[in-house]
Amino acid sequence: MNTSYSALDTFLTCPLKYKYSQIDKIKTPKSKEQFFGTLLHNALKLVHAPGILSPTLEQALDFYSKNWNAEVFSDETEERAAFAQGVSMLQDYYKKNDPSKVNIVDLESRFQVEIGEDDEKHIVSGIIDRIDKTENGYEIIDYKTTRKLPSQEKVDNDLQLSIYLGGFLKRYPKELENLDKVKVSLYYLKHGVKLSSQRTLEQINQSKQLIVDLIKEIQKSKFEPQISGLCDWCGYQNICPMWKHKFKDKKESIEVDKIINEYIALKDEIKSRSDRAAEIQEILGKYMDDEKVDQVFSDAGRILRTIRKTYKYDEKKLRDILEPLDKWEEVLKIDGIALKNILGVLPYEARKDVERVKEIDKESKSFIVKKT
Ligand code: SF4
Image 1 (cartoon, rainbow, N blue to C red):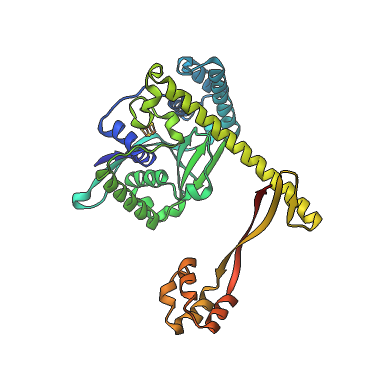
Image 2: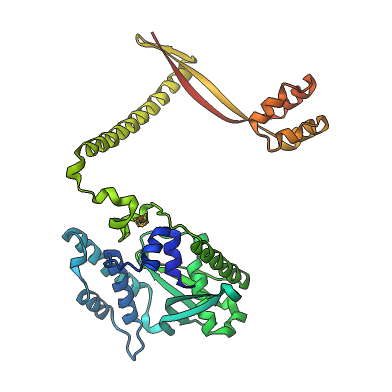
């Protein structure tokens, strides 16, 4: 299979979106997020373009303004906010980086790597935003314009960076011996933060296997839709079965519309009532503690506070008791129900031993209402 990191990522996000874009090849207009990301990438490409003099911040901002397209945004407020955000991202980039001081080896470096063996050979391609020569090695950098900053752990396991490193190593195979001197980084422009990591040879091989497994999954996939927050940015909503109703002529279904609205309003009401019930429980609980009572009365009825306990058992001790009685196998993973079932048939002494290894796992209070 010929694929790319972004295609694999699309499959992980939503198999149906993968089918629409990679198999059916259905084109969608560029979203405002894609437009914004591409413009920022192009501006940074200009910032680091080889030349005697690096462009100034003013020149970078001039390029950004001249290539801005207000049309892709839905209203002026949104458009102005996005434009200002891009300006501040470039300003911050210049504040934290001196373009004349970095030693760039390549920009938008295209690669193709072969993954898998024999009849399971695949080609994964991609474009590395930037490769720098550092003091003692190299740094592979990918710019991100997304809002969410990942944890360091996520960056350390990021599949995209592993694939990009594979692409880099194809071009610089000798660097395989110097992996400790090759950094892989994600530069989050909105936060002005660069998160870096490294990979061992073992991790590179693991990520190759991961890709082979993922491709196998794609090959046998039924391409089911996967609803998530990312649907809001999906260009296939109008043909996706999960969003079909959104585009239906609502004149035909005024009744359904009413029912949907009523259900949403009802859910809101249930939520706010249950929030209020929790608040009242807290107030009542405090009152009962102060008064040292577990039952309170009013004209409407009474409320009884009870304590519900769940137990856990010390596995080793329980096993020591049940194994000699040939009952351990029946309990195995200390399933509460299985244990309860066999307790009845245990000798009295063994039952008492089981009681002794029991500890409280969770305790929850409940309020029982009795109306008068
Ligand atoms: S709208 Fe959501 S579920 Fe439908 S194809 Fe797009 S991402 Fe998948």
